[in-house]
Length: 124
Image (cartoon, rainbow, N blue to C red; front, side):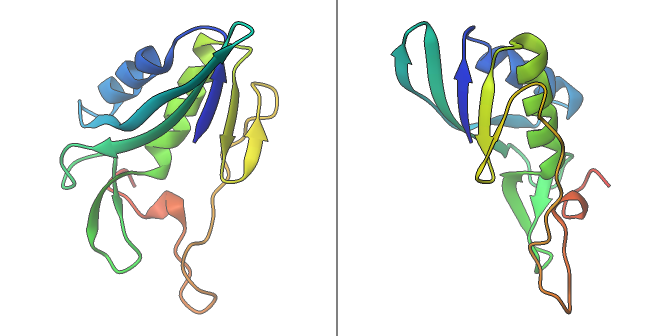
């Protein structure tokens, strides 16, 4: 996910979502890629510390992953927009602002055996 911010709130948003998911969320990658005209640009990837706990994603095959689930990413983006109303987020090949942000589920399974992001985790 790519984030464009006026304020440096990437860590504050992570701390809020980490609290919601029982201190099991951390950055896999958080890199500032540019700082120009008062805007900071970040590339961010989230992961979980323990794949057996809340916030962990489950693969289509049922295997536990250390990737953060759909709910973690959604709450993280919610927090970004709460902390910086001018932020812009690019994720899943779409651009979102505070006014256009919606949680969108996606089928990553097949037509015969659908598997939606929102169901592939320990949160449900």
